[in-house]
Amino acid sequence: MDIRNATAADLPAIEAIFSAIHTAEESGLVTIGWKRGIYPTAATAELALNRGDLFVQEDDGKIVGTGIINQQQVDVYRGANWRYAASDQEVMVLHTLVISPGAARKGYGRSFVAFYENYAKSHGCNYLRIDTNEKNANARALYSKLGYAEAGIVPCVFNGLDGIHLVLLEKRLS
Image (cartoon, rainbow, N blue to C red; front, side):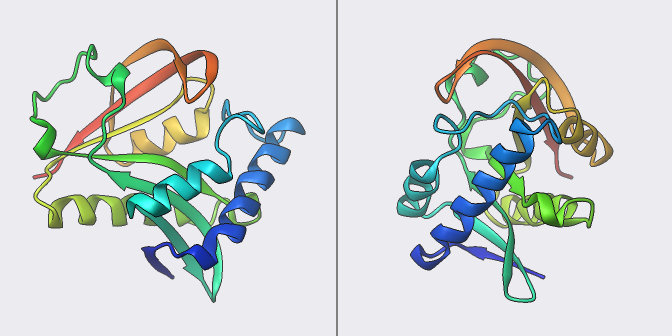
């Protein structure tokens, strides 16, 4: 299993994962709170690729997951009741972590979060922030198991999705 920066050649596989997640949600197999055609889309991946902060997770040559790692805190983070007061330079954020439904429950999400934590530490960031939709019980449970604390739930329009209750999570690395 390998996690690396994405390349343009990875975009079709990333888009296929997004589509599979949307299909799983539309079928009632998962509840994430994303919507096909709004978020995430091919443009989501392309923008992150162009910024250089899109990562893919491969196993046996097949892309099984993707996520965006950077220091860009979304606007709703400003009013949050964060446990740790940290400067922007000290915070690393994980966005849009998604594991292919066909690869679910195999530890890929846990591995991706471990990569994210090591990446943050290697870039001098000891404060980690993540957000997820309040409806996404699986993500919330995973992050809780991995030591992330919920800092609050913020009602907002998020990535073009109206009526979202965004769960803000944080962790401090030692």
